[in-house]
Amino acid sequence: MAVTATQKLFRNKNVLYGMILFSFFILAFIVSFFWTPFAYNEVFDGMALQAMGGKFILGTDDLGRDLLSRLMVGAQFSLGIGLIVGGIAVVIGAGLGLFAAFYGKRVDQILNQSMNALQAMPSLLLALFVVAILGPSVTNTIISVTLVSIPTMFRLVRSQAQVEMAKEYIQSAKALGASDARIMLRHLLPNCITPILVQSAVCCSEAILNTAALGFLGLGIPAPYPEWGTMLADSKNLMETAPHLMWIPGLCLLLLILSTQLISDGLRDHLS
Amino acid sequence: MAIVRGLFKVIGYFLFISLMSFSIIRLIPGDPVLNIIGERGASPERIAEITKNLGLDKPLPIQFLKFSANALVGDFGESTVSKQPVISEFKVLWPATVELAFVALLWSSLVGLALGMLAAVKRNSFWDYGAVSLSTLGFAMPIFWWGLIVIFFFSVKLGIFPVSGRIDVMFDVPYKTGFYFLDTLLSGQWDAFVSACKYVILPAFVLGTVPLALIVRVSRASIIDVAEEDYVRTARSKGLPYKQILFKHIFKNALPQILTSIGLAMGQLLTGAILTETLFSWPGMGRWIIKSIEARDYPVVQAGVFYSMLIIIIVNWVTDESVKIVSPKMRDSQRGG
View: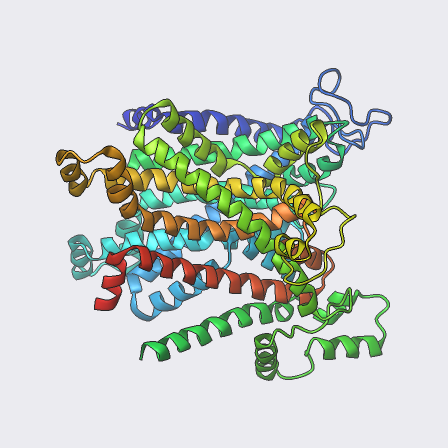
């Protein structure tokens, strides 16, 4: 049963290509914790701005650090933050959405209005708003891009859960004396799983993009860490002498975002 | 009654955005004043001065009322870096952002509409697949990387367009409106106008690609939707020429949705402007906000947040109203309810 469902899912071209691309990054992400060609911060004297090929497969940056190692460790930030944010958005955003739909009235009003308030700013501006208050750091980057992703998740889950709330099975569960938590987790949640799955992939890709954008603006993951957006910002002045520093991190970022978007698009088609 | 309700709404919006921008300094963990001037070199006089300048020496509700009243007349205090009134910096910078966003929106709407229409009309053709893949790629493309690529080809390799700034330094444009397109023409400097155009092309091209993806997708989808309606079939069976059906029946009915997407695109433009302006050293609001966050210049951050949110609210309102104008359905449902 499960096998056929998976097979069906992968018959969707978007999901298939997205998954192939994504698993490539996941592999690099996992491997980077145990092994990289060189240490990501190791400076090789006289080896600055090496082109691709040779001892350093993807070349070196302006300080003589191996680009491939830095990219792999950079995946820990881009992909890692994407996954963390996707997860938190599910727990908090979807949780609050179910909560709002279940209790309705005042609870719903207050939650809905505060989410509206968060959404009044475009995502990057809201992330910048948080960084302006807390200052740039790894934790604060995660906090800011998470905060950005919660309202959309909340809205989608809330509207789906509201539709479900009006159905008879919820009424009968209530009549049978099921507890609030049981109704929310056992009845409401499984019936809202489609928007939650699709949106968690969307949240993941937005988080990756926003993390990189913050890094590019110099307000994201701070200096010694290799983050793709920061690497791109540094490559601007070296474009003439070392264009690979611009092409490769950017391509990684594009492909990673593209893969998550293909997965979310495919899931949406497949599940609806 | 409608006027009173509208007035309440405006006051509510105003209080909300002023609360958001007010809260920035107050939410900083620890002592905001020490945070701004740094732990070292903080003489008691300097601390007192900054505390007073930021209005932190009074109880919170009074602080907020004072802040809102000042914000209403555009007084956000002095920049802690340049010592200039924040509003006078803003006056020079906002036209730069609007000019950039306008050019970006203009080309992306025109091209986006044309591509979306072409894709919808020639469904499942080469053009359709091309437009759809282009828009998928556009959604995934990090705009700052796209900007780097564009700079790489057009400035570094071909040397056609300048990389940074709004106009060539040799031109001295007298300040009238702040919009270089207007100011250069008003002062009769044709060469300066041409230079301003040259400088805006690359950043506007880069900035416009973000909304382009959205506009292509929405206009294609909404035209396909409308084309399946009964009245379109009727018009076809009457034997009307296809061009007439496309423009008079389909396009007119798809327009509200397309306009809404252009309104949404404006929000993206503002976000995109922050990145594009930083990349191209474009002296606008986006770069101003980033610089002020880096320098912990909180009065400027507050003003930046306040005005960006103000712009978004105005844009949303204009979008809603223009959708109502082109769509009788929306207009009547409003009147009825």
